[in-house]
Amino acid sequence: MLDGQTGVDFEREAVAGPQIQRSVGLAKVGFAQKGLETLYQSGCAKIMLPKSYCTIPEAIIVNTGGGLTGGDRFHIHAGVSEGANLCVSSQTAERIYRSIGGQAKVLNNIKVGAGCALEWLPQETILFEGAALHRKFEAHLETNSSFLALETLVLGRAEMGEVLTSLNFNDQWRIWRDGKIIYGDGLRIGAQAMDNLAQPAVFGPNRALAVLLYVAPDANERLDEAKSLLRELNVEAAVSAWNGMMVVRFISEEANMMRSAIKKYLLGFRGRDMPRVWHI
Image (cartoon, rainbow, N blue to C red; front, side, top):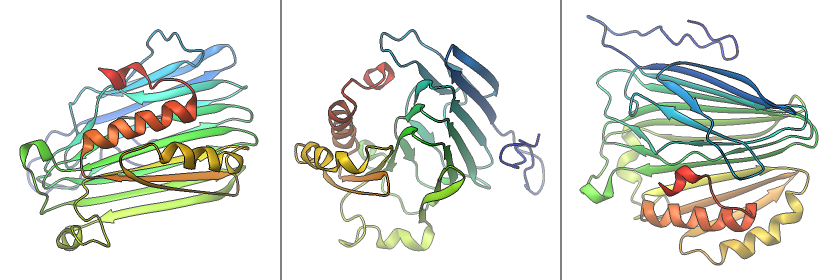
């Protein structure tokens, strides 16, 4: 099955010998001025639309496969138009298990129409020992739109004493505004880099990191507000703003500390609580 939006063949898998069963999921959700406009789901990708007491509708991503491993494919498309707003989150943390062949591939495509607002607030991604993940995030924004995107990464399961020695991770972000690329970011962690992760100039003792991107007409103006909120946190963080964008980076020794810090920061920055799934 070839997805027309990304050109990715979700069913092609180059594995020698007998084929191993893979999880494939594709889901799309879109809101317009009058409400839900698009809802499509197939395979292990599902979208829940819970009753929300907030003025902004919520869409919750569910992976019924329980996690991803080598060869799995998971694609989410979310969009808003005609002045609509939407908050997208995930039912739980996404777990990337040890791969026995190939990479898990995740593609997230976002479209935010003129005058619209979309928040992308999934829970953390946990990389297990031997995980292999290629994740691609693309967002296409139009004039006067507002876009808030969070991605949190946890390296290993500290509560189980897991120390990563083998990992294949490639995370790529690309953001367009009115057809022009305005932001690109990438993080790659391969087998050769594992020995260097504990160096003070890299991660040191930290095993949880997060990036929060805010693209909106008032992004530059809110820089001082963001700095004030960060000073109240118990994790290391830094923020910068330019060209209508704000980027906040967090790093922490513990995943729980990171999660608490992000919730506290976003409560102040957004002016409302996180989606209910974050409290389950």
